[in-house]
Amino acid sequence: MGQAEEIKSKLDIVEVIREYIPVKAVGANFQALCPFHNEKTPSFVISPDKQIWHCFGCGRGGDVFSFIMEKEGLSFSEALRLLAPKAGVVLKYENKEEHSKRNRLLDVLELAGKYYAHVLSTSSGEAARRYLKERRLKEETINTWQLGYSPESWDGLYKFLKARPLQGKKYSDEEIVAAGLVIKRDNSGFYDRFRDRIMFPIKDANGNLIAFTARINPEKEATEKVGKYINSPQTSVYDKSRVLFALDKAKEAIRKENLAIVVEGQMDAISCHQSGFQNVVASSGTALTTEQVSLLKRFSNNVALAFDMDQAGQMAADRGIKEVLAQELNLKIIVLPNGKDPDECLKNGPDDFRQAIINAKPVLEYYFEKISAPLDLSNLDNKVKVRSQMFNMIDLVKNQTEQGYWLKKVSEELDFAEEDVRSEFKSWKGKQRPEFVKKEAGEEKKTELRLREDRLAELALSLVVKFPELFSYTLANLEPEHMSGEENLRFYKHLIIYYNKTNGFSYDGFKSYLKEQTEDLEKLLDKLVLLGEKDFYDLDVDRAKIELIKIVIELKKFNFQKKIKNLEKEITRAEKEGRVEEIETLMQELKNLMDEIKRLI
Image (cartoon, rainbow, N blue to C red; front, side, top):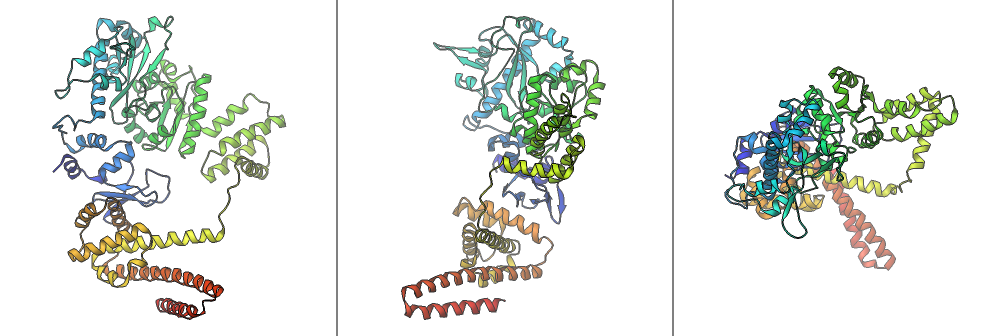
């Protein structure tokens, strides 16, 4: 048994997925709201028996590894690394090829973090330690966050890393450069990227150290020309748009509190955690990105922004607001009473910050106060200006009921008639977006029929897979030509071959057969298995046969109707071209098909 199979055998897919989303037992299986797309009715199904999952809304599916890869944005080897400890499996790298390039980068970054943390504790790090203590960080906090110091030496880290092999293999210059830790000189040799700086390790949601933020030595601020803060460059393990500082430490508290508080700076996040606010993450001085909001959404649908009160912080907050609302999260804004950032606010004690969280304002209420505060609202022009700016924000809200609430609120605050505000909003929206060209009604209907036909074909196949006893009936009554959808047809043909070859059906056996015959139908098998569990979990074989008969009849009707339309077109062409001798034959075929449909009815 390979290590991947060993991990799968020791994990329960339901329990792994339950760590990310609430799941509910339905029959022998479990259902949930899909974490990969917005939905109100559960279409995400998990089979504890088969150890697979599938979403019938967005089409994603697979095993425990594919779930983690989708949810965490990881490669297979990274998912393996994440799940191994949960399964109690120690990964063994029998040769250098098995130890992936990414894993070596993670290891060299972790070692660099330990190096910086050690240097902070030496005489070289005295000024850095003094600064951190002036910022009121406790020794325990410094150690927990693995804060460090990069010495003034040009190549101290480089020499340290070159002297420490991993798994008997020394780190190459290319690996250390790829990790963003050193820079190649123009002529020859390498030098450390970070020198004489306080080091803040950046970790991904799983706790892997992937990058650093480096703050200039406070004693050198007046003369430093590079920048107060510099960050690791983008690497194969670090993409700043996909990382939230402190999420690895905050995610459980976010789940528990059902609220993610987002601050701007890393020191803000650390100070919040030290003061007992564990559900805090930092955007690291930039506006929230789509990927970062998606990360938060894994753990809670409620977000509160506590960005700095200066102009740059407010601009970042405004951009972040749009990203959060675009993904339909509940958003509030925390207005800080003292100081321009959470770290300063906390210097006055945690009570002020705690009260600010309690008093956090719904985003549109905050925005209305912000844009209307400097204006005289007795002036009609100012009222219209505020209304137009609010339309921009209300349009970002996806929920129609919530939109209606805020349109009513705007009308009340500005003393406009609600009906007029709603009418103006509708007109405003029309001007913002060009009209999309609508499909012809006939084309829409054709698409709808095709989707229904494909859906019926999937249901027929799912019934057969769930109730193999029905296969002899299906084989005798459902020809491949009646099957709708190219993928469904290919699956059905393989199913017939397998059934005739083995005179039976088993999930594992057919999956192995598909693996040998084709690369792309295994996922459809899992989808059909879970579709059967989802829609027919409470049927016995007799009731299942009744459902199958209905579906087969519908599929045949669709097939006959298509043949009839094609014959009618052929008859019209034959009449125009004067092919009189063919018309009689075509008419007889048409009559036979009509009779077939009547018999089905």
